[in-house]
Image 1 (cartoon, rainbow, N blue to C red):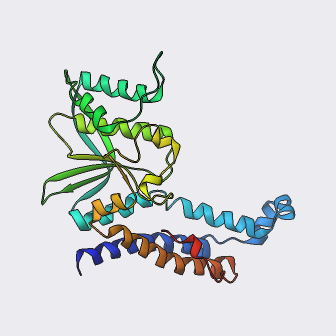
Image 2: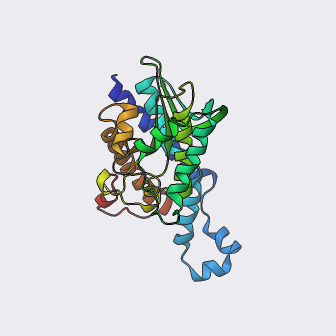
Image 3: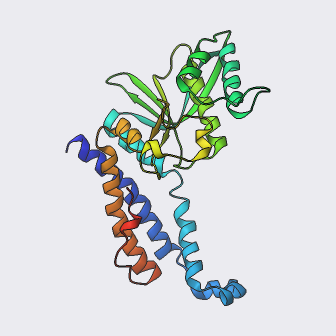
Length: 278
């Protein structure tokens, strides 16, 4: 089995394991029992069809196990391609005091208008160069990465802040601060740090238009930003993103049909092409 096939199999195993756990919970361990629901919430049952609460019952048992699915998928893909990958890995080093001050200066400039000046626009390359040039007394710093990859063959270390496709502003600010600290460490602890979104609901990178992260990054041009295929192909090799999409859509067809028939107890719609991951 070549690397491409191993990556595809790893993706499939993560999703299948999680979905099988969910299906077992909602069908065997904790099924929706309409009599119990009606007894516990008679007013709700009198006003709202059972099917609505049945859907909520499934959602609650689905969301928790899938809470860190992007990190899990990234980890199994990166292990196949690079040999080593950790989730929630702490990187420790030292950063100059003036560099730390400049990190806060840059972030404040992006967040607030200075009297008589327009709010700064994000420019990763310019900002990072300014921060690195700060120096100063070395201060111990520790940063926890969402995903940390160490390719031992090339001795290259990658740190990723991996966020949902539509992240909020506060999350993004924290991620950018962490990335600055990682790349300002002396001696060097990581070779690359990225702000990564595993999927792009807008399609092309140049069309990405979620305003909150755009406050902190130039989402279209910053080299530190990876969206969709850029992220997957970096951690897994060329073609990984298309593999990911293919595996998820094939599994989705199978599980959606099972959910309709076994959980909702209705026949699935004839056509659902508009729900495919693209």
